[in-house]
Amino acid sequence: MTHAAPRDARTEQLAANLARLEERVAAACRAAGRASDELTIIAVTKTFPAADVRRLVAVGIHDIGENRDQEAAPKAAETVGLPVRWHFVGQLQTNKAKSVAEYAALVHSVDRDRLVPALSTAAERAGRELGCLVQVRLEAVPGRGGIDPAGLLGLADLVAGAADLRLDGLMAMAPLDEEPVVAFARMQPLVQALQAAHPAARMVSAGMSGDLEAAIAAGATHVRVGTALLGSRPSLR
Image (cartoon, rainbow, N blue to C red; front, side, top):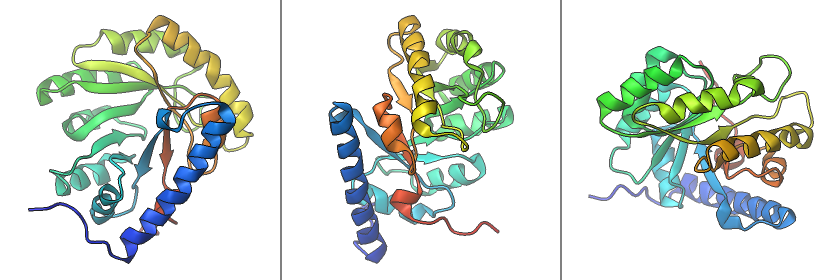
């Protein structure tokens, strides 16, 4: 039995979008003096159906991101058997840790101390190691999640010391009201500090459809792309 989606019109559309996206990534990498193979595209499939996950795999995307467990868990269940790495990229409630640990390979949004034991216990029960990124806030006041930069290393130490968790790196988002280049410039010393303390934490999850060039220039290794790849999101009812 094959899991590949037929090359229907939607699959061809995704393939064309991916080609354009890969051109942007390649150009951004050239401008930053980096190799394109240093970058991983995570397709954020929020509000899109599991059928699109199948299509994305068919066109060569294997890293899939979701930001709500209520949507991610059934989507992961529908696509069991596909060669997919699920990334949980949204703000996470502790009571969802058990569910997320069942399907996610990485949680990008560890932003507070009490998530760490919840994820550790959940990973142990699931019998798997769970990759974690510490989400750091780049804006001056709390906004879309993330720990204050002053707390980054302390939280990273907690993750690194927790059973069945693996500290993989850092996640950040540029504030909506600021130039991404300026915001991501503040991210760079945080990445350096984290990697000085934890050399294996090499992953930098930053950049989305509108600001991936600035993120790549600042050292992103993973970009989280929705609209540029999948198109405008369906309306939420």
